[in-house]
Image (cartoon, rainbow, N blue to C red):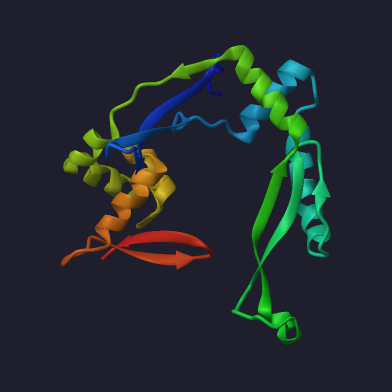
Length: 209
């Protein structure tokens, strides 16, 4: 189980926006790589609140089975965490409502609007514990190290049996999501592209050319 520390760990990186002087603005994000598995989270809840082991897993499994039954009927599901609902989109450009058919609409994903109570508890906890600034290797330094980037790419490809994704490359390179996406895209272009990108189920998959 990862060690629980006090304070919200964050890091800063150059972003896509610039100020009026043309200087790159920084943006803050939670420290990369910090996540806890459901098993570890459940163990922590068991120790802190004396809840039965496995109850969180069973609740999530039941929710994942039951929620689609109702959302598929157009219902929004209200929970203490937030409201879950299906997100729809038109499959073609239409201006006349009378021309809309059943094949002209599809599910584009899921939305979750977090409850004010849940968000307030999170903000209050951060207000109590504060922040922790984690200084990491600058993105510009990582991007200038071509050997490091190549090693990270190969590790990611090997870990995923011949393909990589933005999130996987982030993990091995230490780059932010924005910079990792830009680097993978850069490798897909040029006279001799290193990678090719394929869109599968709304996800970009990168393989070697």
